[in-house]
Amino acid sequence: MGHLIDSKEAVYSALAERLNKNPVGAPVNETLMEILYRLFTQSEAEVGSKFPLLPVSLERIAGTTGYKEQDMARILNDMAEKGLVLDLARRDGTYYMLAPMVVGFFEYTFMRVGENLNMKELAELFEKYFNSEGVREEFFGGETKMFKTLVYESLIPAAVETEVLDYEKASQIIRESGGGSLGMCSCRHKASHLGKACDAPVEDVCTSLGGAAKWLISRRLARPASVDELLRVLDRTEKLGLVHLGDNVLNKPAYICHCCGCCCGVLSSINKSGISSVHPSNFIPEVDIDKCTGCGTCAESCHINAVALEAGVDGDETAAVKKDLCIGCGACASACPTGALTMSRRSVLHVPPANKQEQFLRIARERGRI
Image (cartoon, rainbow, N blue to C red; front, side, top):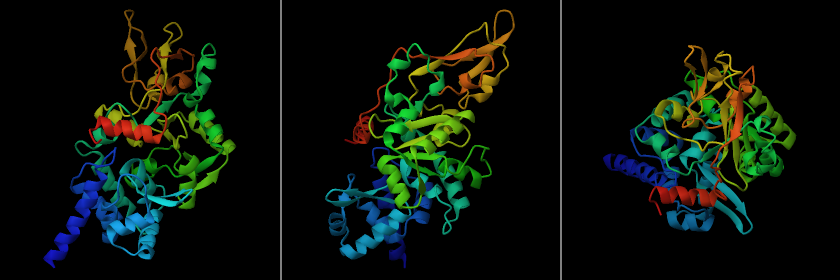
């Protein structure tokens, strides 16, 4: 029996080490092991540990693991149903890829109700893991970010509107996608099991696009949504003062999240650890002191505490923007009742990586993994 226990531990340890080799890894600790024990069967952990970094055919992964192709296909399908593996349709057949933790099986776990899982226990474990030493730094540190901020488009100044490129506009990203999917917000779903969820919407709010949307729909993790419906969600969440975070790529972005500072793992990393977890938009708020009444609405609307009231020489309080912290979402300017905050163009503009491949190559290089 001791040999069997040792063998099982070795299988899960190998899986953990494999996950940590991704461009965005998963630092190995006891909490990670507890998560893997609950999500992966032993045979799934064995298969997962032997995945290469690039997508692979059924024949190759079967040959690597020693399974018959028929048995391998069943295991991979079960893993894809759980969001542990991505099955990607290509011209020459289906290819398989081990899902990373973020963006990956964390989101896919909490984008469903999880009838066969103890969701409260998993929520507690993921919360503990995300707060572990070095984990936020792995997910969100580094120069190349997974997420970029998308400014509220209604706040873009008319003087520069013609200069703003399509990748800076959430509405244009959605239109160019031709439609996508809507699913459950994994972060707020997790927070609900911890008794910490805010009043922001959980259902039908997580926006996915292109191939990512098709995969989520195929695995019943999201439902199809038209361009018009996705634009309505964009408008609704903006009116609620949420932050639009998009996939930090130029071409064929996979998602747009509508985030809050309390539940979102990305924004809460700024609040809890001071990590610059998301690339700012190409805009930043400017304060017109003459219009500011010091009401504090802007500070209350900011999800990362980048706006505060400061006393002037006359003792009156007015809004002040912490420009080294601000991500340029526009929530503060949108909420301002007097129009004292307006969004201006940054002097240095961010151009995202061309696509996911370039994004992950940059991240891997920065972490010394290639």
